[in-house]
Image 1: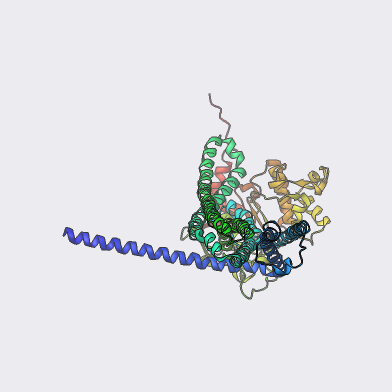
Image 2: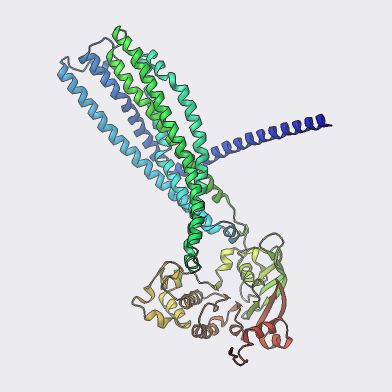
Length: 632
């Protein structure tokens, strides 16, 4: 029994090991295939600028040729004038050089200086062109990423932190710029330099060339190990950067709450853990660089030592010219430098590949809320809104709305009330099609909203939220919100109707008053009134007010309530509120409880039922008729 069990366990372990091996192999294949796919997709962003890249490659080719020319000129100067020796590698040039050593060396120096100057200009042109191409390509990538972010529905933002998305469009795109500007073409230049140098060295002395390349297998092995280490480190670094950005965005936005509850020390410790992950990931990369460069340097020194020893004997025996020996030392330095550069550029490519995977993952995310292939036109008046047996859950079957059915007639003002979490705000989100219902349907004018283009649907709605969002700019710009058809008179009239014009006129710049980030410098009530003016200026057919008066003081509420009568006049309106005082004049009130529509009617009818609405009313107003009792 023991031996049988042992044998079975051994066989199971072998199968598990084999499965893990093949899983690893398949994963490597997927990564390799994904890398090729990523490279092809990145190439598409460079294709529109192919002519500029081609010109940069021509400049690069010239620079590579000039890199080979220098040691050859040194060889000619030594073998022709300083230590004369037979043999010529550039007979067409040597035939035009004078016999006088002084004049000949001067001409060679001038040719060398001209080559350096031309190489400088070519290198500048190549760098400028590739930087320009990189910036243009990154502009296109950022534009596509921002366009995709605007297309994605709210479900995507529920799952992804803002800091992570900011990382995609900022630092990840910057990593791609490094690849375009200093990565691919520079690697091509290094390979061209290596190829030209090897061809020239073989033409000068095949034996010295083989001696110099004897350390190549060790360099290749070190490079392979370095690539693996850096690739893993770069992935960890990019993940850590995204976590840092997410942490900073969340805590900077909530700095007031953090300081209010004296959480500075705790959050500092929490950030230290996130920051430490980034540091540890970078340490792996530093460790790889720490051993790689000394290994390559050691290999180059060993090669030079062998070159000096064997080449020195050859020069002493007159079987090798001193000029060739000097040229080989210069070429040797040029050989190992591109190898180091190739490794560094590979690190850039790995960072860019990791960033590209994240960016393309964003670009490949398809929005769930899309327009149908042939959307129906928005129906003409009258526009009845119908919720027909609507079921909805944000996750799985954790239902937020359960079999909700009601109708809002054209021009009718309907309010929705209920305890927190009853599903009131969800009604507005579904009506605007930020989410799709799982069961049932929502119709506007008899047309299912899933048959309409979401942009066309939302164009007919004006929305005022509980937490008004103002953009950086001016007050007038926040009311107009980029809609060119809204003139200055319409903006001023909208502000007047919501009792905001007096406050705006009191400002030095009026409607041109600068609005800072998140509306800093304005009170909550002022920001809410600007949101009201924004909705009114767009003259929507439908109006949704989601807790629009819950954040304002009593005086401002009276101003808003006065404007509400004008705002809802002639419009089909849905008002979501906790304060029952703001919805008592509604034509009909919907009472939601735990996702179900439990009661509906006007204010007096619901009070007469003495049900959920009556209890809500009693909770809000029970203290108004009671005498104040002071503790003894």
